[in-house]
Each structure stands twice: as C-alpha cells, then as structure tokens.
Image (spheres, rainbow, N blue to C red):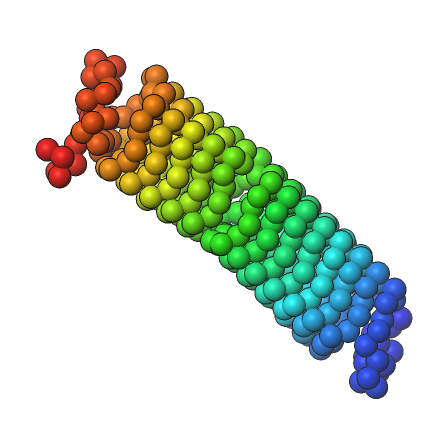
Length: 295
C-alpha cells in the first residue's frame, strides 16, 4: 500500500490497516490517531515526528524503522519487532509494549513514563536519559544497555536482567532492586536514596559518588565494590559483605553495620559511626574520620 492510498482511506474514516505492507515508506509527520496497524510490515519506514496516539502495532514489524520524536502515547505494541529501530525522543507515555523486541534500538531521551514493558528484550539498547518513571520492566532483558542518566523512580524491576548495564547518573530513588544481579554494574553518581538493595549482588559494582541515603542494603554482596565518596548515611548494611570494598571518603554516619564482613575493606577518610569505628581493628584500617557529632 502506498502512502497516498493509506491517507485517503484514513480521511474517509478507515482505521483498520491490519497486515498492510508499508515497508520503506515515508510517513514523516503523518497523523494517524487510533488506527490499527497490527501485523503490518513497516520495516525501514520513516515515521519521524508522526502523531500515532493510541495506534495498535501489535505483532508489527518495525525493524530499523525511524520513529524518532513520534507521539505514541497509549499506543499498543504487543510483541512488536523494533530491533535496531530509532526511537530517540519518542513519546511513549502509558504505551503497552509487553514482549516487544527492542534489542539494539535507540531510545535516547524517550519518554516511557508509566509504560508497560514486561518480558521485553532491550538487550544492547540505548536508553540514555530516557524517562522510565513508573514503567513496568518485570522480567525484561536489559543486558548491555546504556541507561546513563535514565529516570527509573517507581519502576518495576522484579526479575529484570541488568548484567553489564551502564546506570551512571541514573535517578533510582526508592526503586526496588532487591536480590537482582548487579555484578560489575556502573552506578557511579546514581541517585538511590531510599532504594531497596536487600540481598542484591553488587560484587565489583561501581557506586562511587552514589547517593544511597537511607537505602536498604541488608545482606547485600558488596565485595570489591567501589563506594568512594558515596553517601550511605542512615543506610542499613546489616549482614552485608564488604570485603575488599572501597569506602574511601564515604559518608556512613548513622549507618547500620551489624554483622558485616570487612576483610581488606578500605575506610580511609570515611565518616563512620563511633560503634563501628571501635569495632574495626585500627591496625588494619587507617585514616578513619568521625563526623563532628560523634567526636
């Protein structure tokens, strides 16, 4: 189907375009509100800055399609194929994308607030500075994704795969990351205040300059992690594994540290609770600093 035929039918009130072949077409800036493009072929199509609110793309093939800056709020893309698609700056607020294929896609600056993406494949995608507040990513594959500066507050991440992701500068206050595998993940300068990291695998993770004020880290595995300059005041680290971790210049005032493992951990210049400082063997830990309130 060519573009002129499609638009003529739409102007006449037609909204069902199920299964049409629109591969490679140029639909830049087109307005198609509430139409059904399920199971359609839009491979390589150009939909830049198009208005596609409430459009159904269920099972559609949008491989390498350009949807940058398109308005797709409340669109339905159930199990759609969007591998290597361009969705930079796309507006997908409250969109439904369960089971969607977005591996290698670029969603830099996209707005996915409140979107539903359970069991989706975003492996290797670029989500830099994307808005995923309140999004449902339960069971999704986000391995090797770029999440630098992403907003994830209120997002659901139960069972999400986050191996080798970049979460530098991410906004994750209050997020539940309990028992996830974040081995070696870059969380430097991330905002994690009040987050739940109970039992989380953070071995060799980079949490330098991260904000973890009041976070739950009970029984977390932080062996070999870098927490230099991190803020952990009022955090609960009871039972956590801290062996070989770097807490240089970290702020741990009023933190809970009962039953922690600290072999070869570095607390140089760290602000520590008095009780924990007394617990440490000062022959093995140097340059410890107390907060003024504890002197």
